[in-house]
Length: 212
Ligand code: Z5A
Image (cartoon, rainbow, N blue to C red):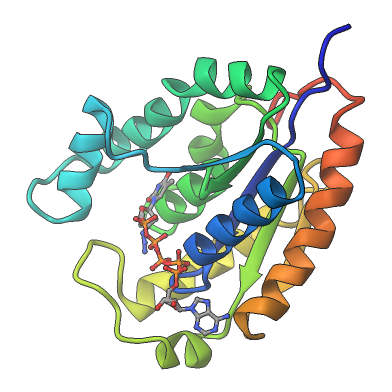
């Protein structure tokens, strides 16, 4: 009998919301409870495309805005065969940023609309659950200064938040908003509850296609 598929779970959120912390915590907790799970992150800076993106984010190189948007998308598409294989093997994937970040960040730049930004990611594996870690700019500031990378300014992040708010109106995606101002355990408990529901539901459903 074919094994039940794993769930595709995505964490999105503003800068310093705790995405990386919570992705690791979730994978650990799932593994400890006997559920196969692995973490992934986008951009995946280890591939050739990912290295171009990394150099751009670190401001070591400049890329035209449409070009870098398409590279972020290509970086997801190049990982799709691996993602599908793992999901089919029953492994739940916990993903730190996905196409929603791609759209929110590029569409925060002048001259870009959501519709154009979404196009290259249409048809990607559709997440069974997308959790948005919500944190006010004041609470984010308590977690340290912005880093040195591109996009890490409060004015830009404010527009990014507005774009995420637009994306979250799409009811075809299973969005859950998480209060990321709680302590790490509190956030983890909320995330775990939603994830267990998604894992149980996903195992009996085919993997969907995003924005199709
Ligand atoms: N980008 C894009 O433009 N297009 C795309 O398609 C994609 C991405 C996929 C990648 O950054 C950049 O690329 C990103 C979007 C853009 N640009 N920005 N800005 P990244 O993924 O390499 O790094 P990041 O996502 O910006 O990381 P982050 O937002 O700074 O951090 P985080 O993962 O949300 O948080 P954290 O590292 O888990 O925690 C931050 C700190 O807070 C740390 O000291 C923790 O110990 C602390 N923390 C965490 N949780 C708590 C709680 N609950 N209480 C107190 N303190 C906490």
